Length: 70
Image 1 (spheres, one colour):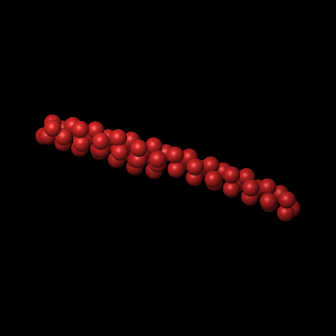
Image 2 (cartoon, one colour; image 1 turned 120 degrees about the horizontal axis):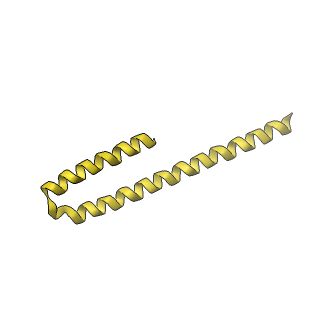
Image 3 (cartoon, helix red, strand yellow; image 1 turned 180 degrees about the horizontal axis):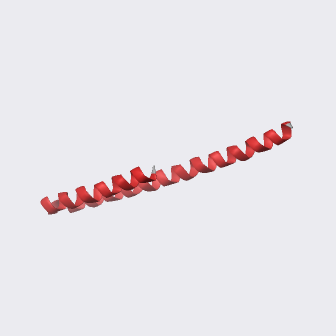
């Protein structure tokens, strides 16, 4: 997932530069899109951490239940 996210961010930077080169008056719109992209990336990171934590906690509980069953 991280590689895909990095590729998308790099692609956006290239597209962003091309758009601003052709249309300098789009700067405010591009800035808003940058902020949306930043929030989306932060949300993706947050979700990934929560999912990782959930799996870690599930693994701990599974081990505990398994030990109690033995």
